[in-house]
Image (cartoon, rainbow, N blue to C red):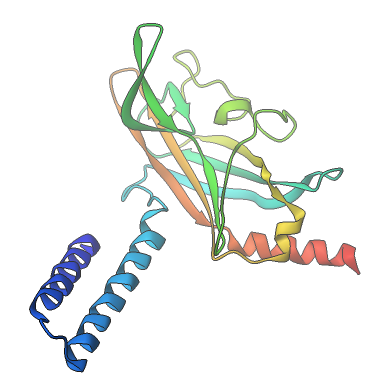
Length: 231
């Protein structure tokens, strides 16, 4: 819908421009107004469509146990984010495969075989002139199960995730671009995106965004925590 509105504004501005032979003050003001509306619409579109929205009906219940930024490496000021949640299976299916990832619909060739391209969980931090994206850590086994799998319990044909039972998801996000110094600033947006793909043994598959969280308050909490050490 927003794209249609933007296109309409664009067409209108082109019409005004084409019809303004010897542009009067009134014509110039009208064109300026249309251009301002177009700029605002484009900014709104960028602000809303860069963050995916979870599926309309997600067949899982989520109980978040922990969500916080923490100093991962004091010697270089690197910061990470920890997320722990209990996920209840509400699919009414016996799930034999569960991963914190989403299939994009695209494929890639590897050794002559086609494999689906997947999207992993990430955090998107947006400042005025910089955007930081944190991916899942696979280097710290104390705080994350490598690759975004569900923690400890192996989900398989022999050990399915049955309906109305709970599995724990632990994720840790880090990246060299996020340092303590950046917590001197407050971003416009700080969002955690968690996709999920589950399958049962007879062809059922759910692959979509499990949840999108606004974690700007977690950013501000860590800012306060840091400020205590500076005093």
